Amino acid sequence: MRSGKTNNKPKFYSWRWDKADLGCYYDSSGQYLSYIFPPEICDNCEIGCCDDTHLHSINAYYESVVFALQTASCLNIPHVPCHSLKPFWNEELDRLKADSCVLA
Image (tube, rainbow, N blue to C red):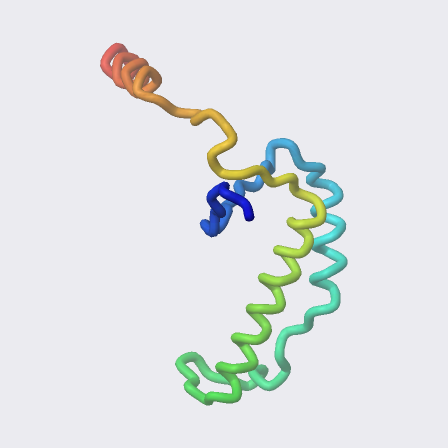
């Protein structure tokens, strides 16, 4: 029997866009998005339409676009646990920023 604690907390990750090959992401996202077509059912729809079929089609279209972009991101953008990096901004930088604004 293990005596160690089990950590059931979900892990959160940050995307490292600064370390990514954006060309590969662009190509992948373009490829995935090329298979998604806007719903034709809404072509003659007026602004403010509340047809449930249209709303469902738009929702499905939106979810497909989000899924395509997330898939391209997962394949091409490195991600690291949220708390693994040192914070970029700190109190000293706040002070320096405030001092520079006063001098300007």
